[in-house]
Image (cartoon, rainbow, N blue to C red):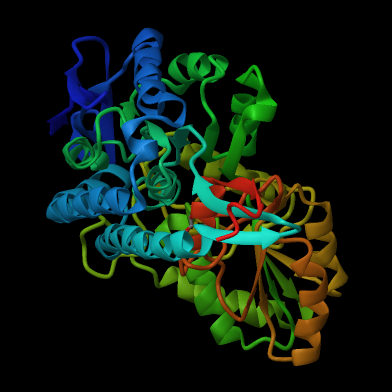
Length: 496
Ligand code: G3H
């Protein structure tokens, strides 16, 4: 049990004596009242005034671009980052354990999340060296010589979700930081304790005020921060509704750069020419990795009617064989869900579909006890059902039968989101007919494979309400900086 009382403010771990929020595990333990979530610890619930102090530290450390961190050389910033990653690696076992307990991620996935984050930081360091070589150059045109460099943007507010509390948040925080910005880091609601062992690493590795942390109720502490107009970049991963609300709070929204990764209900399209075994194994990965709690998850499966029966049979058998249990248990794929309101929400979505004519195809589908929900294959889904439109973000696989490929295309045309699609077909002509519309409707088309963000060197973005700006090892460095230049007229005296 970790009762965290510190938050990082201007290089100091300040002790908090006020209100706290208790953190519960999705892993439940038997009590006299039945199964209950286990208490893992508590975190500070800082108030609006403390939040503004944290913001102030960030603003001062940036100091209009004149602070120690924004003026530090690229080599200097890289050294600090290397120190950070060295300290982070020492906390590997504890962070992995906390990820399992706090968000219910399996041992292999928690390990992957940690190791992938370390790789991401190291790749970012290498990418910065390349970017610096490429950006810090002279360009000559029309009698003028320009010295171009990559400059930071200012104060970055970094916020992200529970599903990848380490990896996903660091895909904005780390590039923003290494480009010379100062960071206001609002910790996620679930996955907050997994960051506890890293607080000291931030404190030791970076100059004071460079990274500052915020804990508490978003509505109370983020509102005054955004209203202050002092945030230059909003780096947010979550829902488009929350992102739009945050942007609107900024008094001069044109001065705010937003790097956002938002809503997605990624479709899979299984045509009559698909290899159904490949389709099923990839869709299981795409729809159910980390219980479907990924923005990149496949959340609506279209299957052509000619193969619908065979496909749903194979899918149902494969889902039924998945092992549910606790995150550290061997071969477990399905684990308890951290969000308290998720099991009843999923139950409601399934009931809505069933009341309109769909069936849960697997016997144990939708089995629901405390925080645990066994995945349900729900079929046939149509556009009158919640599961057709809403991003369930959980272990439910809605399957829609279709006649012609225009139907899934229409779905994507009419959708408000546009992150990824997975097309399953062995017919090259058919694939090309689907690629053409989809490349301009979503930001990544996957052929005969699940949807995913990685490898992290690939660009990660989305259309419509799915994203703003682009992330990836390379793109993120550009997203959190601006090309600035010093232009000098060439004269006889400075020609040499
Ligand atoms: O929730 C969105 C994550 O960025 C997905 O990442 O596709 O690597 O699981 P992933």
